[in-house]
Length: 160
Image (cartoon, rainbow, N blue to C red; front, side, top):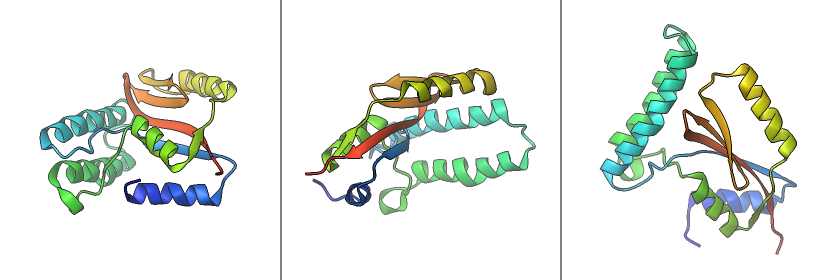
């Protein structure tokens, strides 16, 4: 398997042998070498993030300004303006993470329907109508206006 800091962390988690590994990821496909594709995917992702703030947090809220500047703005600039070792933010899609987890030696666990139903109930009663929760295989997908932003799945280390 190719050396990767991500694989090293997953191998360490496997070595710890937890009863359950809950893996939450930012679902991003803007970790590609070609600038135009990276720019387009980053644009879609960060447009959704700023749209979430616009729909849910007043513009003058200091926490919103902090999130826009220190989190989303900094990450967007890094993805778009930096190359090679200077680029820090390199998200992968949840499907890429699924393959990575399996190669390292994790087995994906089935979703707990009770937890999924509870999450959907809370989402409908307490959150903006444009947030959504979907399922793909054994992943819970959290999205905004149909765009997957985060994905969560449970894993168990396979002992050899």
